[in-house]
Image 1 (tube, rainbow, N blue to C red):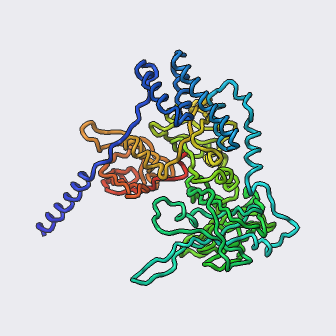
Image 2 (spheres, rainbow, N blue to C red):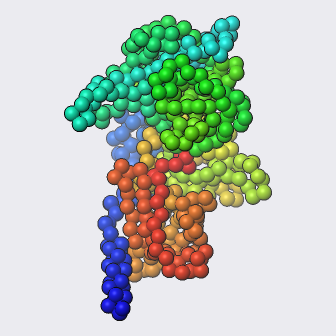
Length: 552
């Protein structure tokens, strides 16, 4: 019996040693803030800005603004700022000449945010640029004819989207391979909306197989019509196609802001390849967090594989959302993308190519004051990533964002929705309140949002701080002799750390950190004494995704 106990003790000791000696973390790239008071640092920053000005003039202008505002008005700094302004101004004029209105608006916004003195004298102002953008975008003109409306007639405006991937061989036998989805016309000249995942293989640079895109009209399901992909967005799962056809019916886009739980809706598509299928149901919920940058509708209308990309319409035939296939093996649990996101995205999708969403390298949650119920007060900043534009611009944890450019911000959704209308890079102005209620103006530059923002945080910050946005706990060292012993400084409500029972002040020993191969998730192994467990010694692992709607 004693020998058995001794073996168990040795086994437990070995496991503990293995955890303690687990693989070391990748090299951390922690950004050192520019010390604007030091002449050498300022000189180095000037050289860095000039080195990127030709290829990244908006980012160069952003950094020149920060330099100008945080140093004495030296001639060299002012000349740099002036050169950056001229470069962005030239890009604005070129975009106007080429009638690239979305890009022109991005440059205009950047010049205004950078305090360009003559922005009000520019040829085209913001309101005019927005008007030019919208008048050339299919789907925003509401081309459908109400005289022809009936639920049955709307089916003519849907298509089956088919991606032919040739033949796949399994166990020596060849089978036709492909992807079937749905879509719908938003213009008479053949512009079609569908889901990104339906056509993903056609635009995936890592896909090495054969892929060719076709559509089939509802009234002529036997004829394959070649289609072209104009723009695509993996983040909100939308894509814009173009086919050389005269659309038999054009859908009108509604306003999903008016939809409420219980409202009746209809889904049209080709479930399992069965084209011209119409099903009905209700809106089950309006705020499901299925995307990194927005909310989705939950619906109970029957939806199956093949429905993806089809329209979800109201009783007047207006598109209120875009369907995507439900969760496998969960009957009745289906979702749809609000049409508002399509409205935001259409001008950028029409410009062509991959749509990359912007961010400023920060993390936070909607602020609600105690006792206010569901009343939103702004966006509470909990973290900024070292080296990000929010960090460079002086945005600090503890501040509350209440505005961006000329838009009020009451929640993180407000900021995400504004970002959906913007390109990166674009300089923006944030209006914030600090903990004392004092108002601040912060500059930031929209940059391309990484696929997994949490992984960038993990790479660019110390683990003690990086765990705040990733699992919801901030750590501070508790021992000078051990780099693995910490106390918990704070715990974010409803985070993975909070759900695991951690509290402020709990002592923890960080045993191991593992990142999944695709960089989408992280697992941390702890040895802890949790207050909620009576400070009993416990070993546990906490896993968390490296993306969430709280990064912005």
